[in-house]
Image (cartoon, helix red, strand yellow):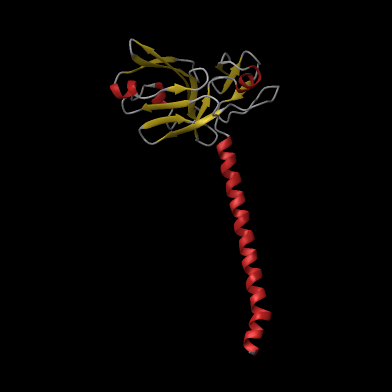
Length: 204
């Protein structure tokens, strides 16, 4: 009897308090994880659809797109069009403005979906800051947000390290998407991007 009374008075409250502390810690961790998941989800632009696949083994260097892999600071603007039922990619390299017409000649390449954001243009490459593989929407984010429509293409400037909008005058750092000119506002809209050793991907 004495032992049972001691357990109830001394040990049980201690155990209950420890359990409550553990539960509070677990709840806090769950809240932090859910917030971080929401934040990572929020950085991906979803207003317009983006789905892009490119097989680097079918298009070895000197293909401009293949050459951005593993080269920090190298980016390409990518646009797509169909000609005679064959898809072509037009790429514009950032550091010298050189363009290239990439013919996607295989059946698989022509049959797969290709959707390049708001204005049929994405910017993709490797950041010189942290070697992250990045894909951006090819239209000015601030003009898209303020005016609507899709008439605000970005162009290379400052040796290809910045993207410029002639409509609002803003310039963006291509390596991290931030506004580097006066005016502030939204950073470049981002899409998911990845490279698995063969395929370049961008999607949302």
